[in-house]
Image (cartoon, rainbow, N blue to C red; front, top):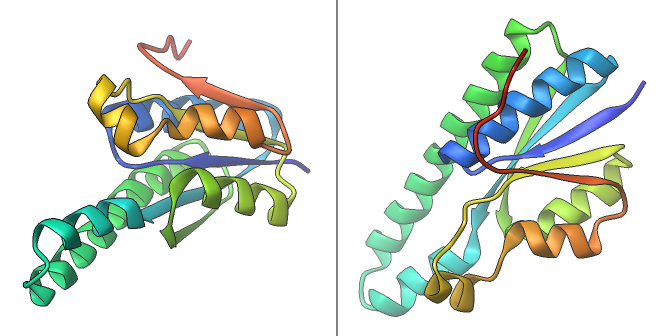
Length: 151
């Protein structure tokens, strides 16, 4: 039996990737491993901007974790609707690195991610998660962007 790693950040593009990934897992008879990464780069930027506010940093960390729980809740609900076995995990780190690490350690058959389509400024500071994953992944990667026909 195979397994697909679906990395989500809760955005509409990630939710499209979730929808497509779950449909694909059902058709292939694969399990799903859902991943949300509490992005340390976002927390580091927050800390630089609000260096004197430790409680604000902790609140931002908690907000991101709650965002992850909601994103993985969506993924789990979609898997349950399609009778696809699912397990989920939330980690703190750097999305591309942690997606690749989990794919390697769990020996998944495929990674599915959404593509946010960042502005040039966001790309310069944050980089492209999907691009890095495609370049360094130990398995095939499907990047989902745009509308999906679920037929």
